[in-house]
Image (tube, helix red, strand yellow):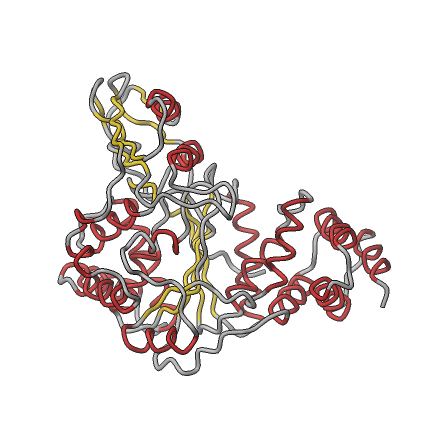
Amino acid sequence: MRTVEIIDQKRNGQELTPEQISHLIEGYCSGRIPDYQMAAFAMAVVWQGMTIAETEALTRSMIASGDTVSLKEISKPTVDKHSTGGVGDKTTLVVGPLATALGVAVPKLSGRGLGHTGGTLDKLESIPGFRTRLELPEFIATVNKVGMAVASPTANLVPADQLLYALRDATATVRSLPLIASSIMSKKLAVETDAISLDVKVGEGAFFRTLDEAREFSKIAVELGSRMGRKVHCMLTSMDSPLGRAIGNSIEVKEAIDTLHGNGPSDFTELCLSAATTMVSLLRPAETEASIREQLEKAVGNGTAFTTFVNWITAQGGSREVLENPGLFEKAGRKITVPAPASGVVQKTHALALGNLAMALGAGRETKEQEIDHTAGIYLERKPGEKVQKGEPLATLYTNREGPSSQWEARLLDAFEIGPGEPYPIPSPILEGSPPVA
């Protein structure tokens, strides 16, 4: 089987066989196929696309490049949750304990952030003592003991994706739906949960900029799950504005704690309850979503959800004292309050601009080697729909970096739009549920 002939076929729009795709992935991982040929193949896919059968074969080949994680020793039905990423997205910290409080297991392998703010692991590591590196036996034992665990993946989980994504990033071939879907779903399907819930972000601060693109990805993801015997649900949510009020790492953990106590921002609370409802309903289809939602709200109200959160965090070494007294979290050296330049109603808070500002304050990383400042971040004192008077706090910035505060204040103000009108409820971030599979 000649690699150049496979590339030529795809360039000409022909459908490849599973054997041909397996040849490419295995050869690239072993070093037999060089970067330039794999880059040519990726560009051919960008131009010509892939059928769902080809995308399935690519996903299966990527999974086969490394280890899979068997969860057969977990005693309860399992569900994984994944977000395609956004600004202020601390959802895992709330939906995991919510779903766990209703008796399902949430084993999750997560990642670190690159860009805007930290990833889930970075946020969790802002909790003193929390350990993200768990060997599989401890990972499973933790899930069996407290209902959930979140840990870093092993180096050999879908290594093909690590290689291929780095190549795509360097060759302008990232934005191809079959390549995106196989990248995300190979990592999710390599962990053998019974069901997968995907939060697909849409908007200026998200990977998917348009609803049509997010819908098409969701259709592929659901179909891939079905072909591999897994239940997959996609919820499309807005990322034109940050989720909640907190952007950063420890500041987001504190907002998650507030939400588990029933005091979180309305948009973030709604997304968490909806996502947790979906996670539980995937495993308990006989129950109505209304009934599950009611049980989740009760778990927040009676403290069960927060207790579940504490049990999970402390099982992985996190400090109970800090969770119960969030004021003990380490604080940034500088606190900068930015006043509103005019009176009116906040019309928009630009997610991408605020995410980039948070990174400039130290809450994110531009390279994988860069260290994150867990204390840095932004707290939005006003959200879209809320009224503000000139001179009132618009947002608070936290950083340990030196330099004139004016540079950050100007960027913060550029990220806000204030206009005339009457206040209105903070918009729900939920756009759509899972689309039908064609």
